[in-house]
Image (cartoon, rainbow, N blue to C red):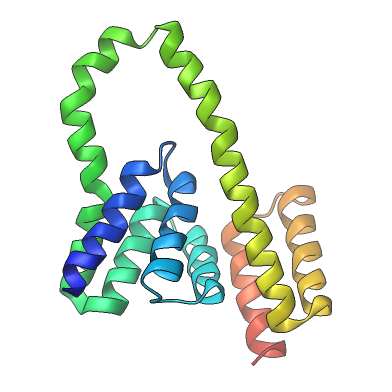
Length: 176
């Protein structure tokens, strides 16, 4: 039963997550935190932070990790397949239509409508991560991590990999 649940959670998130990995993150969070209760919001936010620091698409990394945690190696394969299956199916089924109508004003308008929706979903998820961080570790540590992350990423242009690793080291030293 766990393998079917892993498949459904990842497949649903990825088939509804129009716009790639960032669009699927809030949907996947809903599945694994709210629906199946496999992880807490804090654990999920840590997965996202670590996944963002590693190379490759975020959705597949999350799917493989979630699958492995819940169902071992077979669970990782099920989660990974379920995360790429919607794209695979849609690419095969819609490739001809997409090439035919790629310059259509309706398709361009659909894209303009979907982008703000994705931005709102990511904003809500960011707010939840921030609030959970605030309640779990306190405002001082949260402020230090947010401010240093902003300065390092936006002002200094440091790679997110190093910022995530720095946050992990900070957490290991000050929050252990």
